Length: 224
Image (cartoon, rainbow, N blue to C red; front, top):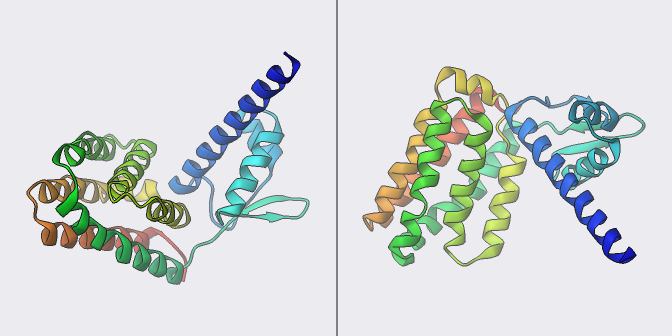
């Protein structure tokens, strides 16, 4: 019984660590945690109302993803992303997602594509309701679930990692300008093209969508 209790305790601790990491990623993406700023685990733990240990462990997870970097005796500095980084991340995503969109259009079952419609609609709803976290979660789910229809898990992992590294700084400002809504609606346009079997049109839509996302970064994203 002692080992079982210990295992349950470890599981609960890991779950808390994952929840904190998720919340921190959301804060990074939305711009609450600013590039170049240093944050300490105790400071963040106080905001969460928990001990510093799971926060420190979560920050180490983010450091392994390249989102933050440890600063000795101070905490963790949010990694700054420059224009060159963003161009390279977008180029890699384009090389992966555009041709895969065409391939999936030709091969995927209609019901698998149709299952993405509620997610695409949720992206639009979140953008209109200024629900930034909901927007980011639904957007991530749509793109990665779509890629998963290729059957290539490594592609999904690669794009998931790129999405984390190319987080949208200043998302609040984009939301206030209404720039998120057109980008959100492109998911429904893409899905309609795929369901119509228009592989070339879907590829062009995905390429335009990724270019649109990059243009948003150019307004409020990385530094030169």
